[in-house]
Length: 229
Ligand code: ADP
Image 1 (spheres, rainbow, N blue to C red):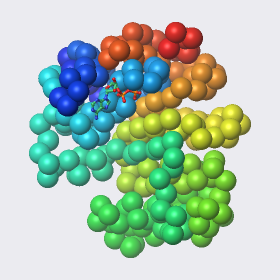
Image 2 (cartoon, rainbow, N blue to C red):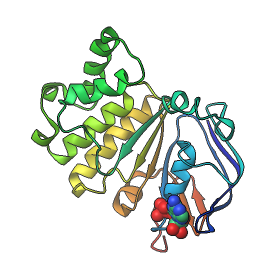
Image 3 (cartoon, rainbow, N blue to C red):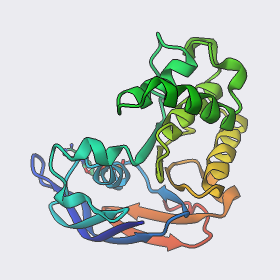
């Protein structure tokens, strides 16, 4: 469902080679950790997936769409097929939990009827049915991240990308968040998690792709976190 073919990204302003001839294949339904220290190229890889950046050379195919060839007009439509989760949650503080999730649907043109049906469904998937009318600042960090996961699910994406989703959470809450992502993955959604969290990577035995200096230095089917990374 995701293919990188000889992808290189050189940032023109600094002449930094952030990714150097990357070739990568992720199948539908996989759960993949993306690891590597700061500056390794993880964010660049994610930005190429979301079409925030364009590769300098190579080809990126996601869900049969050639992302490299998308026009500026097509990019917003393409992004609807992706769900994003961030370290800092990025919720709208003045909107309730249900409004945050509904808003993600509204911006892509969902009807009220579709929202009424879908929002409670995704909130129940992250165990937040009882908190639908709460504001983000009335929730714990873990609950806020669960809202973000529900929002990512709202438009029924086939790929969820989580960028350091547990970076602001304590170890127990981090495990809980990962369990929700694992559950979502089990129901068929492909999940990519960029993380520094060694305990999580080591405990979950998923595919681990390690990047360093813009290269893939390791790709293990059921890997762990190596101290070199
Ligand atoms: P990571 O997410 O693993 O920390 P990044 O993908 O952010 O790594 O960065 C990879 C390399 O690309 C680094 O050397 C970084 O300085 C450089 N880089 C990232 N973004 C930009 C940018 N917008 N302009 C210039 N250089 C960048």
